[in-house]
Length: 318
Image 1 (cartoon, helix red, strand yellow):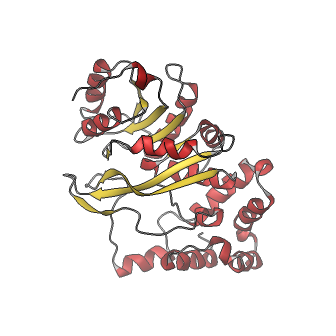
Image 2 (cartoon, one colour):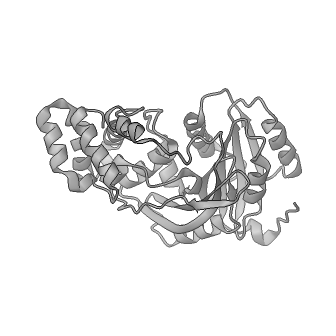
Image 3 (tube, helix red, strand yellow):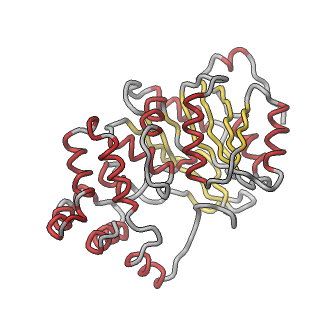
């Protein structure tokens, strides 16, 4: 594929794309092609490889040789997906080679639609640039050969702070955000089991930032055996077990605690109250009841999620 970068493109909105790779040789080239061929914007790929053992680094270096002004590779030790993206966030703040207007997360096995980033920045430009800004949207789930399966986000969300503590409405592979949000989200340590996209969404909501959700698909979200997150169908037994004994308990509590402690001086009175309900709910049975009595602040449009909220609070695993 041939790319042309003229003066007009250089003067367009600049977006730093943060891509974490690990043994992604099978689909990586398609994703790099789709990022570098984005319409109407100027892009730069900051890639951190998480100690791949296949041809991933070779593929990246080949593209780096072809487009030396468009790609920077950082090779690191194996620390896992979330920590790798957190490291990318820190690297992005100190990057000297490129000064972006916005930042975007990127997975190694998707294929972006040609106008994904242009649609993102068009929405972001209409928002208050003095606040944390976050754009995210939908994706089309496909099989490994990119044949469509279904739209990813079939659920409807309220987009409230309470809901964001209960569940993540914002997929990282569609997220685009401004530097204010990146700086805020990068300065506070948080539980490593909380995914980077859930964290940056939670930070934006806690700090009363502006969000924009795009309902139409922005990319092809490839489903295959090596997906970190994807389509999974659980049995009835598995669903009940997940309610009573979640694989990773206390994630909502850890998220709320990190937000409350880390940004206490920046929270509105209402947001501080919402987070405090979660942070203090383990201290007594009465605090659990207080949290449940504030159900409307945390409720979603999904009945199963609401049931999980009630059960997990009572069991102390929220």
